[in-house]
Figure 1: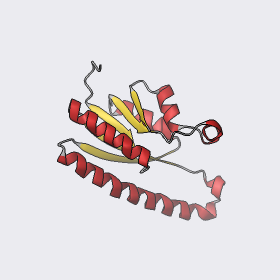
Figure 2: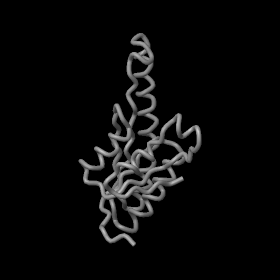
Figure 3: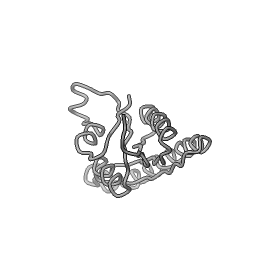
Length: 148
């Protein structure tokens, strides 16, 4: 049973099916608790030395394309929310650390909960790729619901 009022829910959103499932879950919670939703997309900066300065324009094009794709998808989700009378906003950041950005954003925006997807990686994939969901769960000061 949730005793604290859930006024604001942040959904880290990357356009994956897992993040869309997280949105669905967050929307259900928002309807139940009359909460506001924030779709938060964090694009990780890539160090210029990693890909070479001569290719930085390609990275910028990729970021622009990804941002446009996310805005197209989140505008559809905002429309779904609006039909259910739930206020939803989209925020996009380019950042050095996705986990740090999610935690910083939720703190500065006084979020009450994070609902996020997980790709369900395990074993060697988890060790090599790391886990944003795991990092958020380990360090968050507010409840985190992970949806698969």
